[in-house]
Length: 373
View (cartoon, rainbow, N blue to C red):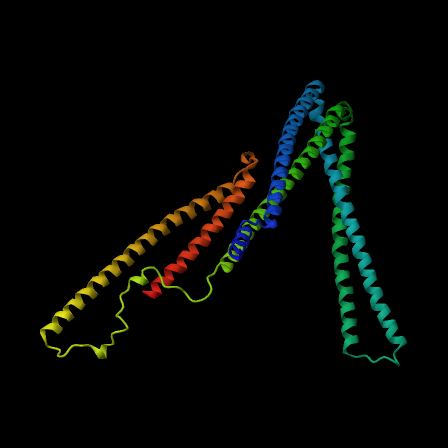
């Protein structure tokens, strides 16, 4: 009864599936579903972008043919207007940066002034030591760095302001010069601005989907690596659990090694004289018997070794086939996955673990046999 109970527990432990495997498989399935959904959305977004591009080209071309040469005449004004808008944005950014640097510089100066005031007010109680000197030097260094940043940002702001003023003046000159063409071609450029805005929004949507797909594929790869790590951990745990304990038994073929009978000591033989004919005949028979036994023992060991080598080659082929099958299942695309993919992958990993464990046990037995011989 106890033996049956132990065997049942051993079978249960071997057939028990680590819950982490189920978690990682669910993660793989979720990542696969997410990748499929995002790729479908990306295809739709690309199709929408192409439709918007074709429609925008058609509408802009229609307005261009309708308005005629006034579009080309007014184009320099609208190009200068775009440059002026970008220069204004750059000038505003430089102004914000200069304002921040100015505030940092003022705060650093205030810190130094406050430290000096506190020291002078407590001059009789405090001692001007190395720590105080280091703190004051650090505050002074911050003031100098803030002053340098303030000067740099001030020069950058001045440069951007000059460029913006020049661009604005050019816009005003072109507006006075091309007023009639500008008014006549306004529908064309307004339609162009609307089309460019729609295309930019759709392009941003495509970029977001591409980043989401990249993230989902990274999660899929991480789950797959985690699944491989769990499989390796289970394999090592089974190896440690099934390591044979106690003294090793004799190897294959050890029982065929001849041994002299213990009940006949060498010093108590019945040989009367070493050179008698009976002694020579019995010695010759003993030599022949030993030669035959050695030949039988070597032959059995050779056959056992050949059998082990053949079995090892078959096991290596099976292991290679299992590894290739696991790799094939892991690298399947999302379109090739079926409902039986999860169970097939789990079963293949389980078979691979058992095959690796069996090979290691046979290697240990072969090593023990070699040591016995």
